Image (cartoon, rainbow, N blue to C red; front, side, top):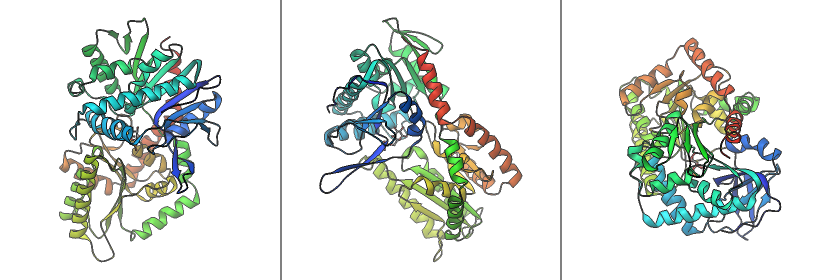
Length: 471
Ligand code: G6P
């Protein structure tokens, strides 16, 4: 876990668990990198280019020592090496089997395992040291997400001269849940090393401020926390978004439109195509969605001959037990529905445990009459925003869980409580049978919001607030 010393340093440094590239290690041990598409990198591109930026993160492969290199657009990428033991304790353990379930309403019970905490601390220190080595005097460091909550305070001790922002991409839980964490005070103090702590929803920022009041003796006023050293920390919501214009442009191309028509034909030209697109994660409500769909077919409210559900479930965190269990549960449910309702050559659920390139996703969005986003808890949910950005034809309907950050903004969707299976069934039928005029009216409202609040607006509002906070 070492990094080299920077020359004169970078004015802007982004720190995230992952680099915006995927690594491939060939049989001969040679390493190659390909750009991983993602909203964050699109948003940060102009900022990084203008300020000789560096991006610090993990490659995604254990035991890979790699030296910093510049990507095609001139961003310096600085890999942080994690051993197989670090990956097991810091990434799979503390990040994804302690913090992830704790911060998502304890849908699955979090595991509190003391050695994982030590791994989390050590890995956070390694990311913080890498940032301290890379940032120029008086520069800015933007730290991302729950894997790196201790980085702000460690970095501040190493480099008191720099401005530090932190953004949490997932929900921040209510005090009553956060209180369970044996290391709750250390985590809060880690975050308070930042000048600006950003959240997805106003409710997340309010939860955080309540936790600060309960677990520290610091004074707060509105969004501000007054630190002992005279610094002020601001906690505020900055709802993240997508590259909406880029998406809108992509979907208007003839190639994507053709592909969408082909997809519908390949599905057997059904009357209604329903679509779910998720990482295979227990927060996404896939089991609840399948239950609702199965009942609608059984009751004849949706025709098994004329309806298809395409469920893309991209593989995720496959070494963590709760994810293995979820995969089994989902695959049993899919098998049951298809077993009960399929005919030879036609299945009511197309289940794809795969990841697809952005072009194919865009075509799927365009081919779908109804998009199902039924998460039990989700920081934002960018799939909902991508579906809206893809529908320049102003058709299609979005069924959206009220437990997503996106529900605060996308109020023209059909909002559902995914625990209320009957309510969700009614919403799915309403979406599948919606009059085109009503669908257009709703989609226009949704598009106005998504196209005017894109990821570039998100990053610039965060960085503007950061410049006017703290030191
Ligand atoms: C969520 C988190 C991200 C994470 C992503 C994929 O969106 O907020 O920090 O990168 O899931 O999960 P993974 O564990 O594969 O990085």
